[in-house]
Length: 205
Image 1 (cartoon, one colour):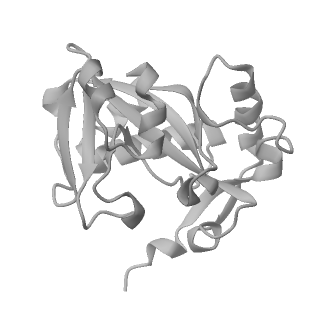
Image 2 (cartoon, one colour):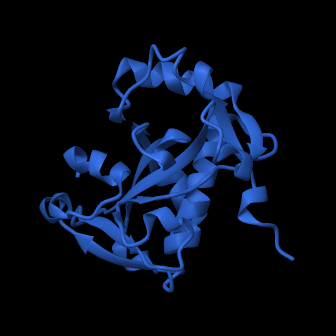
Image 3 (cartoon, rainbow, N blue to C red):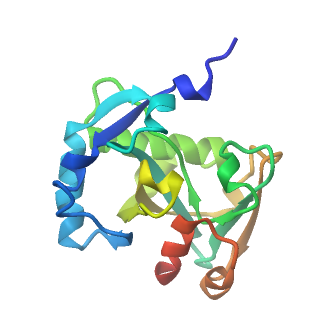
């Protein structure tokens, strides 16, 4: 029997540490230039590894989630995808998204910052076929997302990356659960059915 996704061991940070007892709390997208981002990212070194099923119900921890925005390097079009029924997170079905990613797992012998990138690269390969080696070199950290107004958001924090690719190299590997389209920034901003995290990224589309 394969391990249930709820038994997955994931990277989390204690909320009190993460936001320095709420002093660094924020809502929405915070670009990496913001001084709060540095303070928050510095707390990632105190990460813990916990069982995902327990963390989904525990607001005292934030699960670190990679969220990579993919752009075509020539046209600058953005990859927008929809999760079809059958995809992982039932609460997000039918919603559009510009962020590819997911939970983070510990990687032996690496710093937390290396781990974040390795995990983000693995997701890009699994979802859209971008090679991990390429992703590792081309993923750039651009900021953080936090949304404590939703049930899902309360237990997650988004580590946002941008990755420029050649769109001809993108293949939807999970085509039973994802449909993708390439769209200009203007059109991407007009999409109305985004999950909240993607809504927050409209200013940078």
